[in-house]
Length: 573
Ligand code: DGT
Ligand code: CA
Ligand code: CA
Ligand code: ZN
Image 1 (tube, rainbow, N blue to C red):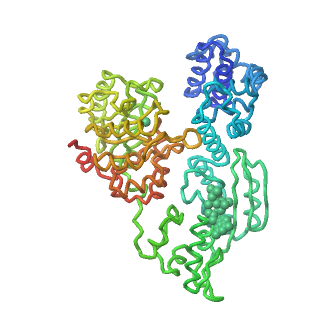
Image 2 (image 1 turned 45 degrees about the vertical axis):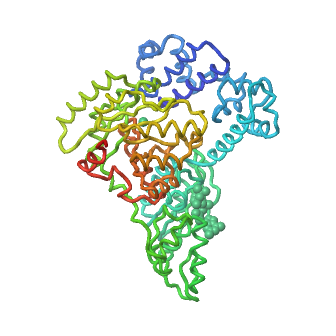
Image 3 (image 1 turned 120 degrees about the vertical axis):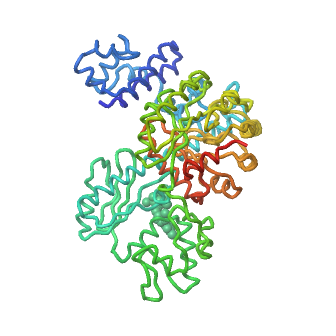
């Protein structure tokens, strides 16, 4: 059994205990054990097999009671304790906790007073006014719940870019490995690097299409084959991911990949343009009368239409076609333009790797620099540093910098923007850092006006270099906090503050359209990973995808600068 599976069960137990308002210490102990197990390098099942319950009890945060529960889970693959707790609270009530603004207390109140036991029932109760019968629930709260349920339902049918892309890449590899697919290309919204993905579309060419389809439909992890044909199959995998595979002829590959990459809106407009030129575009090619004039590659297709090549990330019918006809498309930023990563955490706070490990991993990616930006004291859940600890960390960074050549670790911090817009550290301390990231981690429910003022005040502090994840959204889980983004962008332009594009797959914040707004106002962006371990550094590609969707070029992004240029840029006025 994976540690994460075990941790998951313990988390579920703690949630149910919380809903039943059991002893807070008991709830905490399950949460703590779950976190510890999740971060443990050794496999807990192995530990148990070797040393039984006494070995488990040697682990941090695991006493007699917990070791018994864990033994039960390892032996039976499930928890009888969890099963018992679930008898009293329907799963649908627990599911409601995924709705932003619904905590354990409210969920139980909804269940006990109004007999609401599913997300669906919650939505209809909110819509037909039933919710207002509950004490302390106002119109605004009801409105927010409706919005949050809709947000949750949308996400439920979608997958994160960060989940779908590795999944699709594995499938492509398996197809190519056997030589049955001579070419295989990910298309659809995934190729356009949208932040959420409905299904995965893969296009291939093959000399043996029948064998390729047989291979595809027998891949491990398939739950259901929705369709199986000679040129098109569709499979649903265990995690609910739907994958379409199509096989086309070599000479149609370009026009087919253009068609299946979409977006639909982009395709429709392209066809109109073709018609206006006396041509016809379809997935089979570009035709003049009966004669095929293009189709083998996408480049050929755009050329036949008298256009510049349009990168997939721009194909949303949001001005790219008009720009391509005028040859005015920007040269989009690319992953290889990135020279460093300016937001990450070490094991001094909630990261799991040491500063040196983060630096070495970044150097391996070919970077010239990173910034270590651990949390400040107010973010207690993440073990934020106090002033003394930050100063010690700065000393450690000096020592490591002496050891590593051709690479620089910048001294930074991710400083909390407090409710009044002031920062969690005094200016005197901030002035000692190379880079200061400011961000919001609390007080999410302020009004739009208050929240906007709060961020603007932080930007006016001359030591603040970057505002991290400016809208605070967590895709499908937490809506952006209410801010006037246009106002924030204008103030960033005025104060020369950089805005972050956080590459974490559930953040992607600023999102694509906001990146484009920022660029138009001359605001610089920093594409960062907010890594909490060395693997997270690879999230940069999701940020790059979003940046490209936001029409950003190399010169819009500060971490494409080399170290000297970057230090000049960070110089305080
Ligand atoms: P998704 O999967 O919902 O995240 O979004 P897409 O864009 O991947 O959409 P999907 O999988 O339904 O179809 C893949 C592409 O095929 C789509 O981007 C454009 C093309 N396509 C699908 N249906 C139509 C259509 O009715 N008309 C046109 N012009 N293109 C279509
Ligand atoms: Ca799709
Ligand atoms: Ca599809
Ligand atoms: Zn962070």
